[in-house]
Amino acid sequence: MDITPSVALAEIAGRIRRTPVMTSESLNRLTGIDFLFKCEQLQKTGSFKFRGASFAVSQLPDDCPGVATHSSGNHGAALAAAAAARGFSADVVMPENAVASKVEAVRAYGGTVHFCAPNQASREAGLQALIDQGKTAIPPYDHEHIIAGQGTVALEFLAQASDLDDIVAPIGGGGLLSGITLAAARVAPHVRVTGAEPAGADDAARSLADGERVSDHDPQTIADGLRALIGTRNFAVLSAHGIAVITVSEAQIIEAMTLAWRHLKQVIEPSGAVPLAAVLAERERFTGRRVGVVLSGGNLEVGALLRHL
Amino acid sequence: MDITPSVALAEIAGRIRRTPVMTSESLNRLTGIDFLFKCEQLQKTGSFKFRGASFAVSQLPDDCPGVATHSSGNHGAALAAAAAARGFSADVVMPENAVASKVEAVRAYGGTVHFCAPNQASREAGLQALIDQGKTAIPPYDHEHIIAGQGTVALEFLAQASDLDDIVAPIGGGGLLSGITLAAARVAPHVRVTGAEPAGADDAARSLADGERVSDHDPQTIADGLRALIGTRNFAVLSAHGIAVITVSEAQIIEAMTLAWRHLKQVIEPSGAVPLAAVLAERERFTGRRVGVVLSGGNLEVGALLRHL
Image 1 (cartoon, each protein chain N blue to C red):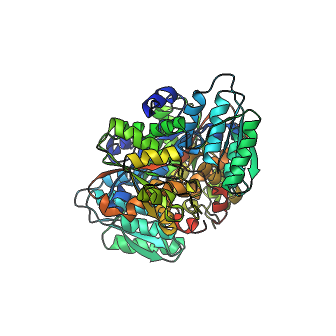
Image 2: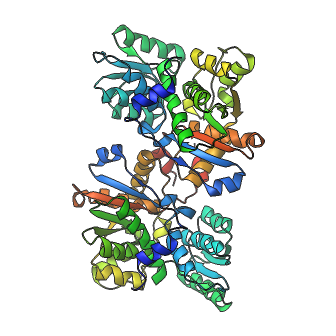
Image 3: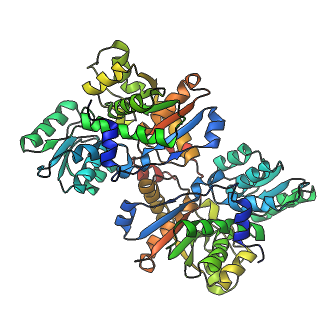
């Protein structure tokens, strides 16, 4: 790719938040792992998705007639916010079963929501209708600018914690993980990059194990941000770099969320806890190393949870 | 007092965490208030209590035979951690109905827990038995060193955000609020300090309104850290400085927690959300001002909550 994460970072550095890196003595003591956490739940719009969306929108002409996408939530909110910053409209096709707070977030950032049936065909049909109206489609992950933008998280992380041995990040469609892979390969090739995926949505793990992108995919997981099928560009990058993916159970995801909330005091959504779950699931692979974990987002229905108090 | 927060900060600066100050554009936009949040949920042991405990323990002789206290949780954990750092034992009398994760935390930091009936008389009798065994009592709030130690949070906050107009903090026994009052009076007398208290545990508000410390007190609130009766030293400081206290309902506390979790992505315990609730309850008092809010702690049963997902 000519468009590297470094190019993207130079473009968007003034618009995104350089999120902090956190550590926890108590979590390290409890787990025996030397963890560093990159806090993308503190990114604008509450997830790393604002990076890719900001870069992709920055590459559009001033007379863009508005952007459109389909999204289960975080990419939609990020795109709406990035588009609003340039004065563009944003139309977002969302499945009827999207998390209510994510629907509200798209609207809060000025986006227009179009509901569709909760399947890939309906999402694509909804987006096509918007493209037919002249909107510019910005897909959530299978796009060169999006991949480069998401990769900026690794450039920051490596600058903030120069002695990392590992970066572990979640994989849904693969925008984040392929961006990180490209960034690390360029600036820190000794750093091992690993993907983390729910066992109930293990299309990336199967695709990389088989050497061929799978097409059968029936995701069943609480990690709503990781239900997408791995993209073709994303698969190509991860495959070429021999990236391994660790899968985790739903119980392991909840356990990791609990640890992150308890020890870091950070609200992490289920998808964001998957990489921590993966490290704990295969602890021996990470012992004695400085393990960087990307906490990818923090958008979930806290109001519903807190009513249980 | 001769022992000021400045003296305490010079002593403990290397041992406590200088917690960050956070802001949220989306929360400001939603509420119309210009908020800055001092993040004591990120303090060691998960609350501001580690400040006072660290300073009080620093003033003990090397041959101290161990420390003791009664606590519903956060002071106990903080004291256990501060004592362990000096190699002292810590015995903590806790009510049988204390939050389970707070009991675990005292033990995790090396403290010994002694359960008692959930009333003031049993707590004091339990502590007296430990004093009779030769332990040094470090009370949770009605103590000159504790007050000075808690006041260090205001010195940091004022240095990090020099243009604050207000500091709003919760009041239970009053250690935090009286420490902040003394600190602000010395270094930033133009800053208005306000207390925030659950309506179901409004002994401080009544005491300050009456000009006399009340003794009838039957706290009924989800904010377990704010159930204590205001201390005599604490009442004297707050009364002398004419500090106002805003009371809030249980529903307002939950609403403020929800806002903090959603917009700041921070796990705040109910007690820690009370000052945010107070500002929102009396919004007109804070309009057009730079409002500093102390998020006092983040210790609650997240495991139980997350099982609802």
